[in-house]
Length: 108
Image (cartoon, rainbow, N blue to C red; front, side, top):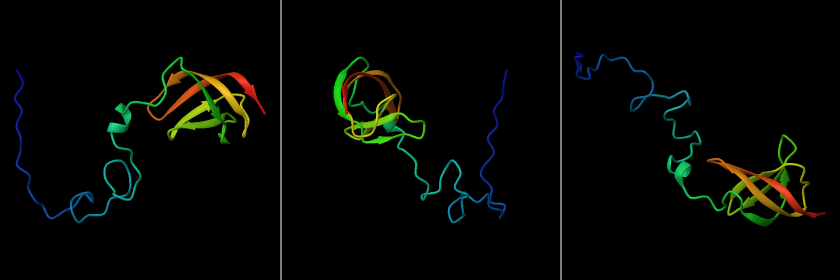
């Protein structure tokens, strides 16, 4: 058997830095200046579906060298695609903030 005892919140005069009026270090949890996505963006319906074939224009190249296209602002990484290419892609995987696709047609 377990007994859970809850102690009342007592003000000791010491601040952890995250309470009202305190200064947060910018780490997880609460500084209003740190960019954080809404938790609902994780569950928001994505503008593409796995297996869907679409025509896109590669707008930039990622740090890893993959082509990057956007559909309604949603990022899609396309290996072996080059910037400026208009290509036909097939969506392979969808993650909360991006998708990956394979190149099935297109060119310079």
